[in-house]
Image (cartoon, rainbow, N blue to C red; front, side, top):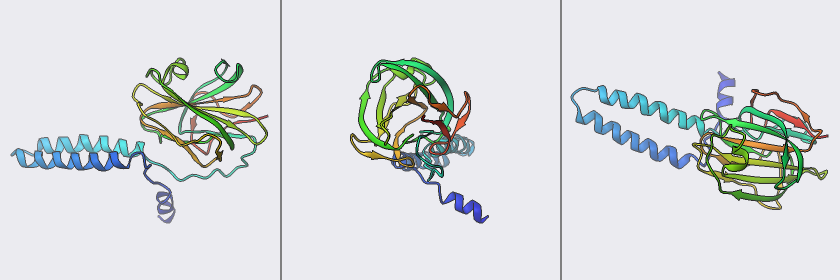
Length: 229
């Protein structure tokens, strides 16, 4: 029992969802009261309560923001920037920033995952850029370039450049990025937040050791996805 209480203390609600959860709760309660008073039978009230309560609980789960600390050595380590599932591990031609081939590891976040994003490596943020775009399904390959996204370029202490890309999905319509140009960044810090199902790509140099496999589940700020050479 004591261990469970300890774990619960490490769970909090992300600030991006506080207003949404509070306002929606008041609206749902108001509708429930109207249904309770408007019908002789309580079937509409209970049907609405069960459905709306389930949806509200899913949204609450979506906005969870666990307090996490990476216990390993951060040097040369690349941690998962998000909770989700590995959907891409491949070499690609990156012509926007690097103009060479890069290893990309992509994590897809479903509606049931925590949507807070963490910095995948420690170093300095070189720049942050936001690009408008489409809203293809986030797991499709073309989503990485064609969807609305935010790019965060990080330079590690040894000079390695790592690109982290937040990508909006078919449902996600808001990308929040906390990273700022020329600021120091550390593993355990929040990079940003994406509302509803979405994806995060990490572009790494060729020769990087991959530590995950396709379809593997990841835990943001905990799962080591790669090690820089």
